[in-house]
Image (cartoon, rainbow, N blue to C red; front, side, top):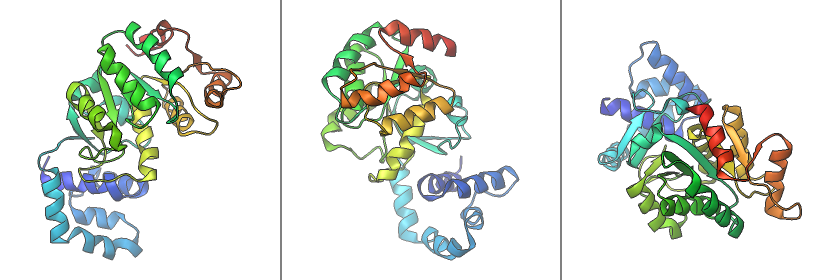
Length: 284
């Protein structure tokens, strides 16, 4: 892929609305060149002049090229882009990564849960993960709580971790997960749809969740409050045809409300690792 095509896809991934991104991809499929003007033409008329000025800023373009020059990436038109992610409603156009991209083609279990989750998630994952096949990748978001617990448990167990983050891969959020993120990149795979230098914003975490849901063959929810982000991810996974598995919890536990609701709605109750392995067989 030429640099101009890569930059166009990166602009789409970081700033364009889903409608504009769709319009650009349709235009390219119809023969339009992968240049900035195609992006401008796909934008609403009221914002085209401002967008063109932004794209043509020499400082901006030089900085963008410098940031991405030494970063590994794949795009939605590349053959190594994971097919199951390509099939979701709004697939990321660019995936920046550090580590081992071949993990994207393994069977995978996504793990999500409360940021305030703790002992129960830790004990459950310490029991479940060692009994899974060594050829199963563990996907999570490198956030506080259940995400960090999942990645640490994967590293301890020897299962390859895949971390999907909502910043550039050169940023660390939360800061206390710096060493964990580095370990995930070294022993597994670190992924982001955002280019280097991108800082955290609330909406980017919601967008990140669709990637976790799309990459996972099975999604496991550990602990979650009612109407939490973990339940949104579970909904995304179910809508994409993934199996949602859940740890049951006490009826008086605030972090058990979400998982127990999912079980009531038909999610798979997990009592042992074999329950997860059984679901993974459907994706062989």
